[in-house]
Figure 1 (cartoon, helix red, strand yellow):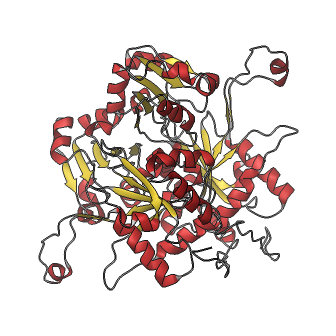
Figure 2: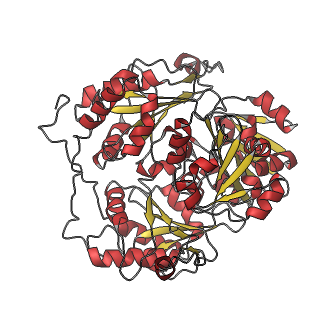
Length: 301
Length: 301
């Protein structure tokens, strides 16, 4: 049996009781260690907490060495630990499909991930549209596919969760070219960088998917002892010192409720000013453009 | 301190290790018992698992008796247990705001909820739009606010998670009128009812937010020992026997990926037929209508 076990967000003890029981009985325990990190724990503290060895699984092992992970899983129990939930933003569908091909049973033990725990900021989860990812820009590579998605969400009044880039065990272009297995120090995108990149793309595109005054919520170290929320405009947060990783950003949609707003006030510098920015931002995409279905579409088309 | 503790989806042991530690040390432990249920546990089995008394908190206690829940929480630890995550589809913002007014510290211990665990069906979480709720229709009351939201999601190609109604401790209109505290047996909407209601509204509205042939995934008893997925068209699933509760439904958006589709094939009766329905459904809202922002909108407006 292959067990996919979510570790939650921060502490060793964020694993579920059932997850821990399974970890203790498995023959091998892998920790997926390239799409996220557990903020208040590491391999050593996990090994101590579990009372057993944990094998780090980097991208290479998961993507090209899945048969190594799955070896003997027809008859033995293997655990694959994932920060957050096993079916979070990054899914491991490939591994599961491969397991099924090999006639290995798969069971998931779920846990919190940023995708649902972000509700802790006070914005209602059912008011979120599609989730987008923001990757580190380079001088020559500034992918902006998030821009249309944010626009789509905001057109229908929804909030957007933006997941910020994490670079773990990446090689420099020079080291890669020379085939040297030297890895750069890990990098985690902070709130200021995310907001600056958003503003840079708005400056280029000028389609007003959002403006420098669009209200956002900085979500820092969600679920950890030092969890912090900060609400402000994109411009304000582009100068915000968000501290240690991990961070996510939420951009508000027009349909923000009074109760959501009241909840956010505890995270703003100036309540009146923030309300004013929210009200100004609500003028965009108002009313939500309604496009009736085209007349030539029908069931039997 | 007020601890809001997520219980996850099914088993007693789906609580996190940290959550369990907190439950054991709290002076009083409330279980929110009206928005969802834990599928493989009840009050008695939880009390046995925790080794302590659990107080059931019905809607009345939470909404009008929050000061009773919060009594002494300035100096004592109180636990408020919520099925799923404390910030799931139903949030307890009122309770938290009231706690803050009373100068009571609040900490959340997160867990999986349907909002993130639904990824287990094989559809990518970041491809989901806003979540909608479907309530039981009566002869005179058929609320259809979900319809526009499903339409909005599908216009931009996104999947929709539909949460299905749960009625716990509800009075009949007659008993309510006569002031008799007699409650109806709990009711949980099943997949067939949900699909029939969806088809009924499409029949009335005729705006083709979806059609009888739109592909959906029935999500039954997510995270429980008898978890089941079934993929088919709305029409097919309107005759599907989904078994014991709880259920949710996912309606596919146009942007379904091949990998998602491949994953869904294990849940369909006829792979070729299902693919054909997916491809036909993709003709709707294609290409996603792009409406540029109005020209008279600007930052300083």
